[in-house]
Amino acid sequence: MAEDIDGEKGEQFEIQRYLDLVRRRHLHFLIPFFLGWLMIWGLSWIIPARYKSTTLILVEQPTMPKNYVVPNVSDDLQDRLQSITQQILSRTRLLLIINKLDLYGEGRRARTDSDKVDLMRKDIEIELVHDPQREQITAFRINYSAHNPHVAQEVTAELTDLFISDNLQVRQRESEETTKFITSQLDSARLSLAAQEAKVREFDGQHVGELPSQQASNMQILSGLQSQMQSEQDALNTAKQQRVYLQSLIEQSRALHSSTRADGPATVTESASDVQLDQMKEKLADLRSRYTELHPDVQQLKKEIAAAEKKRAAHLGDSKSEGNAGAQREGLSAVSAGTLSPSSPLAQLQSQLQGTQAEIANREEALAGLKAKIDSYQSRLNSEPVVEQQLADLTRGYDQSKADYDDLLKKKNESEMATSMEQMQQGERFSTLDPPSLPVKPDSPNRVRMCGIGLGLGLALGFLVAGGFEFFDDRIHSEKQIKSLLPMEAFSEIPEVLTTGQQRSRKARAVLGWSLAAVFICAILLGSAFSYLHS
Figure (cartoon, rainbow, N blue to C red):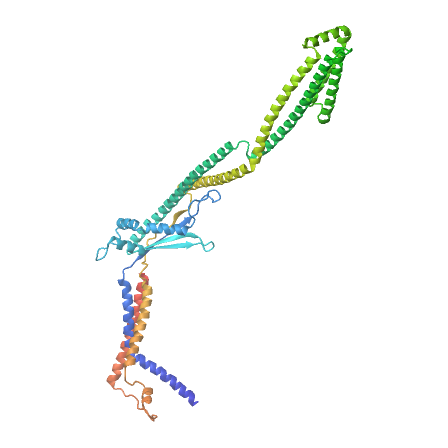
């Protein structure tokens, strides 16, 4: 119970101590507190007001889908905006606006053009608006701050026009430059392709008949020539056999004519014709074993056999009608005379021999021509791998040049369409969504915020000043301080006895403190309300 009483006394003592501290130091706190607030509040009205005008520019996507017309300018809007911003914030462009609207001419000292440009750059602010889903730039804001709201609106309108017009000019210029570049590359590719075509044509002209595309025809021609050569060789062999056969017949005929057999010339002629006919039939059998009935050599030999049989039959009829005596006298006289009549068998054999020799010469000449042709086509076939490799190298370069030319031609057509779209202002463009605003209230300074800052500064100054006075005050103001100085316990207390003047003075200080507190609080409330209403 005693401890509770001691605790209550301790709490009352602490409260009484704080109340005494407030009573002693309230003026030390209130005056710095009010002065600190008053200084910041007054500064908010001394600083010139600045008005911010804002406009929102929408980034409109191309009206033509990209599947139909592919843009030929950069799709990085942020980089393009940075480039346009650098161009607009250049010294030349800003000086045009400054001189047109007579900006930054106020002040005690005259500003140079560089100072004006630097000030205007600080007053311009550009904010990008992103799409939260696709993280793309959908719009951007242009802010400009000035001391006059109408000037801020006019400058913002000028900057908006510059951004919109410069974006169109930049896109059109980039599109036209892209088209020109692709056109120049296409011209170079056309020249390269023409050079490759000339090389291929020259190569084809130098290797006519040796190209890989002619290999099949060369093989077919070579096969035909070889077959023709084989036929000519067979015909030559046959002609040579015929020549040998005719020569043997002529020798036999001459031998028979020189003999004096009783059979007479008709018998000689008949036996010679029979031998010749038998040899021709054997030759026909040999040809039939190798060729068909439609072969020219078979057909020719059949005709010769028929002619020989017809001639043999005619000779037999003549010999029967004229008689052996007349024929013998005629044959002996012809042989003895050393001349042959054109119708005699020996003359016919000699004529056939001459024809066979002529045929052999023609066959040999034809074989020589065929062999030369065969050697030529075999040489073409042998050189075909080398020619194919050389042509493949040329064709590879031609194909690459052709592919590059076709690709550039396609890009040129697409770029021309994109340039036409940009010129018709159907591409990506800027449009004003919110026109430049006319600010009604100043954007800076924020007087309400500065009132709060003044309150914080005033509290800090008040506590600092009051604490300083209390810290450097060496007087004793409480019972606890006295007890802490005495070496022993106090047995009794003598209460403070105040005179009437002291009581009046203390009461007056209290009234003054409360009055100042009320005045300061009212002044702070009125000042804050005034700042709020005029902000």
